[in-house]
Length: 150
Image (cartoon, rainbow, N blue to C red; front, side):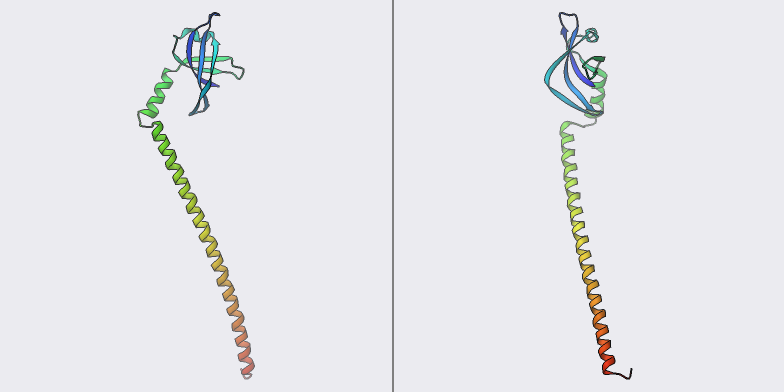
């Protein structure tokens, strides 16, 4: 599991501490950690105190890798912030997408309502056609009774 961490000063055991700040949830989603957790790691001793690093941990909290987060952070800045993708922009886009989704839902409901209405009208027309056929037969039957010569 990948974490963003900050290097802490060396402990008595000679290992540097890594204060975990955020955890990767998916490729482009991270969660800020609320509880402060420090992992002791000899691998972090080559970094200065306060440096941000990316730490890969096993499920048992064993350090697999520690690398400087500078390039990763610069990549985020270049990818998102330089092109104007800010948290405010993302929030606005999320709201716009939600409004669009709601609009499509309403349109879909309206189309469903109209389809039901058309189906009901179709059934009414079929019933009327059937009624007219019966009435026509009844009229023809009456006409043939009144006019036996035909």
